[in-house]
Length: 320
Image (cartoon, rainbow, N blue to C red; front, side):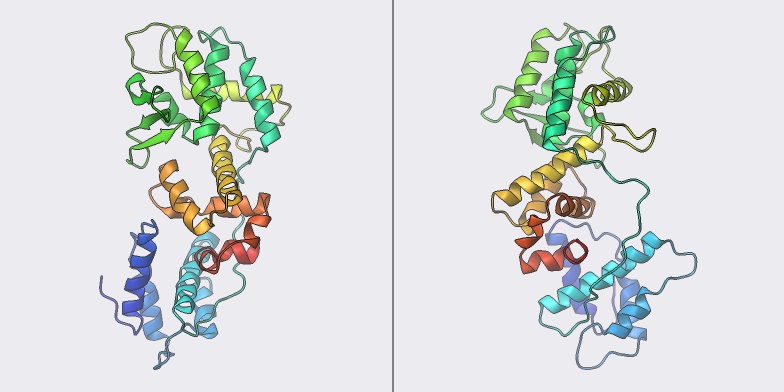
């Protein structure tokens, strides 16, 4: 795509920079929009840098624009301005952009709540699944320990599992984002899976998890069990559509993992691409929200953010 403002080369460099970090940056029409705005703003001189007036003009709500689209549009220019500052340009960097309120906020379980969930999963009984105790124990430990999606878990085949390797793992294929990946298992999750496989009904089916009719276990069964487990763990459910949801185990894995990597001395700048690949996200944009959730639960994370991280994740640093 061709850009025509004085920032054309810098925009191309910025796109390349973000892609090198794992962001898709696939919709370059967003950047053509910014390029046209900068070209028409009338403030292009020999000195490059986004001015305060330019930013606030760009930030104004457009007709029929949703708050989320306005926020995303503002963040694109804000982050580009942060990139210019990183390169040494005198560029305006707003201290705050109001984040639109989401209808649903992920529930992040505490470590104590996870222990109670495991205890409840270990004692569940169901006439609809052979070895339900071992089955639920394996399922919910795997969901938390790996962060895989429920659909990915129910799609697992026996040939995808490698429990005898030095690092037990399984392969996730045909995923939501079309990105196959290897997922390592924690010792407790691997042991729970071994226990289930030792009592798994014999079947010609390749599906790992089977019900009492030797049919692949469904996501609906897992959702039903999860409500029972929440009750057994004394964790209140807020009602349909309000959670906690099974998918919140994935969110919890991501937040706990980021915090653990921080505790081990890693910077968020380095952590996020690792987590993004592990979760099977198509780009880092899908993983960014976990930085905010981690900062909300563990404020000390922000204290050790490098200057590079603050420019990559400005909304998190400035608004936490």
